[in-house]
Length: 361
Image 1 (tube, one colour):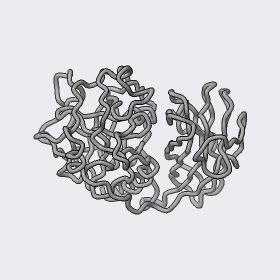
Image 2 (tube, rainbow, N blue to C red; image 1 turned 180 degrees about the vertical axis):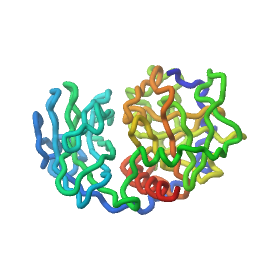
Image 3 (cartoon, rainbow, N blue to C red; image 1 turned 30 degrees about the horizontal axis):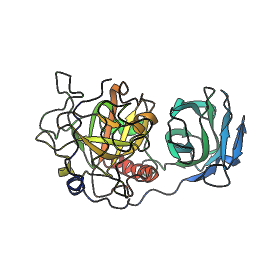
Image 4 (cartoon, helix red, strand yellow; image 1 turned 180 degrees about the horizontal axis):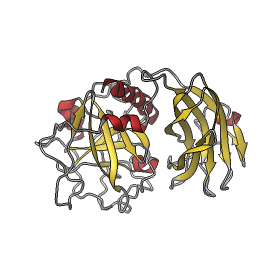
């Protein structure tokens, strides 16, 4: 995948803040899930430790570097249905670590990617959905390589109540965007060197969406993964800033790039701005990210290094990305993630907005 050239930032970040909107606190979310600490789970080839910062409970599980090592939780569901499973982990290496995630013995996410969190004191969430039975269920995370799924902190578990609650599955979301009510004046290219513009921006109640490729945005804070050496087109700024007025960290924060406003489409006319939640769907996975940067006026389909890494897409800014198969659902409205750099808040708000979207369409 070729990195796009001539990345487009808004000329003045002060203007960007004004155009993209002031961040506001996240709105109300669904009922709190039940939390199961990893240190209370069944552990095979691993140990409970507490030698890193910011973990929950009494510690975390450090899996041995052995294929087949696992952590297994026993959870309880009041009724059968679709459960939202969120696993909190840290991975201080520079590469993603794979693990199979199984529910009641059946693998529901094979070789799921546990992406880099930059250091061992920083934690991220891996969220998926799966069918569960009423009563007791087991959820196991098993290393598929010698590098294991990194450090595991806890598992959050919640079962949706019919069509009314719980985070929707990727299939539920995709079913709502199977047809397009085009709102863009024309279409976008997926890359600067393709001949034809093929991607339209479409609208449903409460959201706009497009189906495209994913190119890798590595702008913002200089990191091991994102800098002038790794990325030919690196820029040390992003259109959206953190609560401390610093550029975003593309290697750490899942965010999406929207095309800069033009005659094709002006996102600011649709209650979209910095901190707007985006459901990014790929390979039967959904990741909740935020609008974090702007790109060229005629090109669409780009997200941060961290977004690609979390979805199991090659995140390398020079040769990574994927040519197709990515759906971006951007939730309209005044509710934004605050602070924008808090990914956990994006997941909480995103799950709530996604359920509202599914129920409204």
